Image 1: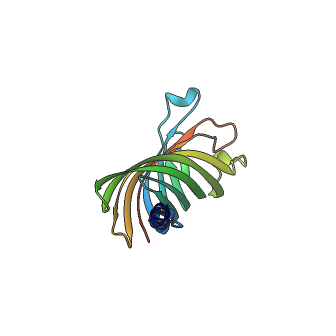
Image 2: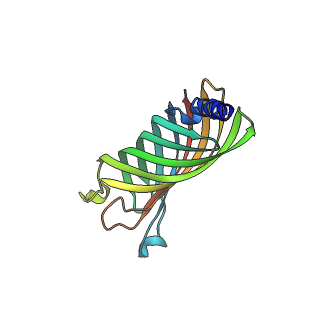
Image 3: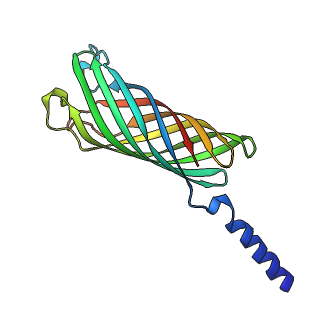
Length: 193
C-alpha cells in the first residue's frame, strides 16, 4: 500500500509540473491580409468588389493541453476599403477583435515543430468608421466572425514562433439591414513565451 501511495504521489507531482497545467503562454501577434465582400440583393450582377485591406496586431494568450490548445486574442484591426461598384470612397474602420479559437496540434518534429488546425468565434467591436457606409448611422457596434485557422509553429520550449493563415467568415450584419458580408483572409505571425 505504501508503494502504491508513493507511486501515486510521484505521478501527481509529475503531472502537476507539466506545462499543460501552467497558466498558459502570453505573446504578440500581427499581420495583414485581404478582404472580399459578398453582396445581397439584385445588385449582384453589376457588383464590382471594393479593395479591402485589413491590418492586425495585438496580444495573445494560449493554454496548451497536450495535442489541443485554446487561444484567446485581443487584437486591434484596422480595415481600409476603397473602390468597387458602387464606388466606395476611401473608408477606414477601427475594431477591437476578441477571438476565442480551439486548435488541434499535429506534431511534425516532436517537441519542436507542428501543424495547427482550428476554429472558433470572434467578437469584433467597431469603435470608429470614417466615413460611415452610405452616410448611415446604422453601423453595428458588434459583428461576429467565425475564424478558421491553419498554421505552423516552432516551439523552442523557452519561446515559440507561429505563422498562420486565418479565414474569417462574417456571420452578422455590419450595417443594420444590409445583408452583405465582408470576409477576410489574414496572414499572421506571432511569438510567445
